[in-house]
Length: 308
Image (cartoon, rainbow, N blue to C red; front, side):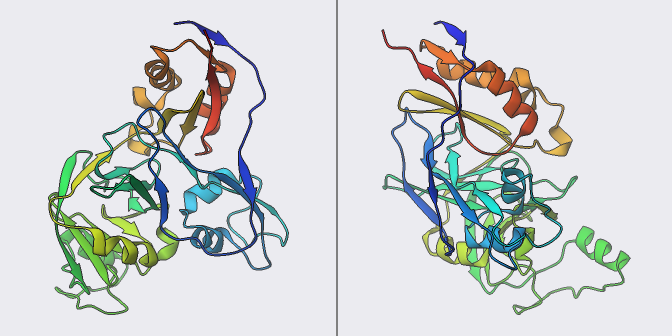
């Protein structure tokens, strides 16, 4: 194996978009040797657009739009005609391609329907600091349309501090924070559910549950069956191949894990080294260092195979 630093320009495949809605991104899963799905897109803001409208239009999370467009103020509407980078390209997590894979720092999940060569990906909202879902293996146990909600004690106490007294059992309806769909898992008290707060998708806002846009879980719900495996992972950095090009993708780590080895430059170097250990590869290590610093959540080509 040889690794040579190569300071080169970064090439992007992209398409220009007019405004339209995108939901439930479904892709043909690449060969096991490859990991890149989707494509980068570029568009322009329409009058009245904001981070929330763009996120919902392109089935992205709040954080994904923010990190891909640091030149824009996320606290107000975007100027009409402002250039937008639409991060609809992803590297598949370095996990077995089966069941449901939830990557917490990315705030995105990947679903591999059984007996197909497809992968479906959705943005998600996750637990606030101190309320993160356990990072472990699990499985789907059941699902419920128009679920009742029994508020846990910590949520009852939190709302009480705001002067809100929650009922012991909340029936289905417009005030039920679970929305009309709930998918339960083998980790007690944690579930996938729709949300009456769509602007929380792509943020850390829940008490641990996985929040989804209603349009996404409406698509996801019919396909889910008890027993489907779930992997909850913490992978702020990813690397993978697309034919002869090596890509890397960096996300903000979970605050409670921001000093972990996997969230450091050394961790990214280790991930990349594992990808190229059997390949003669030119790697732009300067770009790798930049990505670890910037963490824009976008796959970037950082190297290429060297032909014999």
